[in-house]
Structures are given as C-alpha cells and as structure tokens.
Length: 173
View: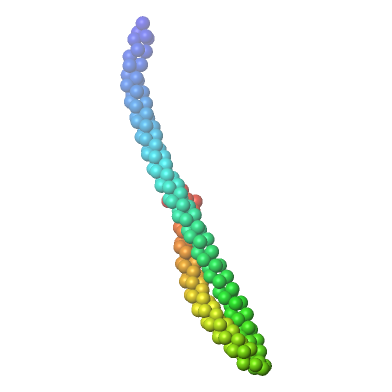
C-alpha cells in the first residue's frame, strides 16, 4: 500500500511539470502556426496584387495594340494616297508633254485652240494633284509620328510587364 501511495504521490508531483512542458510546447507551436498563417496571408495579398497588376497591364497592352493597328492603317492609307497621286502626276506630266508636242505640230487654229485649252486643263489638274500629294504627305508624316509615339507607349507597357515578370520570379520580394 505504501507503494501505491508513493506512486500516486510521484504521479501528482510529475504531472504539473509535464503539463507545464506541454503547455509551453503547445504555445510555441501555436505561435509558429500563427506566424505561418500571417506569412501565408501576406503572400496571398502579394499574389493578388500582382495578379491584378498583370490584368491591368494586359488590358492596357491590348488597348495599345489596337491603337497601333489603327495608326498603322492610317500610315498605310496615307502612303497609298501619296503613291496614287504620284502616279496620277506622272500620267498628267506625260499628257502635258504629249499635248505640247501636238501643239507644236498643230496646223490649224481650231486644233491649236483645242490643244491649248486641253493643256491648261491638264496643268490645272496637275496642280490639284500636287496639292493633294502635299496634303497626303503631311498626313503620312503625322501618321508615322503617331505610330512611333504609340509604339513607344507599347514598349513602355512591355517593359512594365517584363519588370513585373522578373519580380514574380523571385517570390521573396
């Protein structure tokens, strides 16, 4: 019976120290878990912000690509107009030369008068085409400048995406 009392007494003496160690270990474990949860929450916030930034940049990138396509069409249209007017000017210049040659060879005054009228109309049309070409060249230059500006904006967006990509490669940042 002494033995059983001694055993009960020993158990009672050891129990509080055992509970104290478990409590301390449990507290440390809970603190570690709490720190891990806080870190996970911070990582989730960082990931969410990064995902939102990526979405915003991609949306801006799509808009910029559309703007570039629009400006590229303007450049192409202006170039086409310049080329067409230059062809027309070349044809009119050729027609002027031919009419001047015919005028030199004209024998009667009626034919001469008709060729002179034709020549003045062709020259007037040539002047109109030259003005059209000049305006088209101005539009082409403006469109090309706009294209370069939009391309620069696109490059800035692509650089931002590259920077974001690099920052996401290293999750500790």
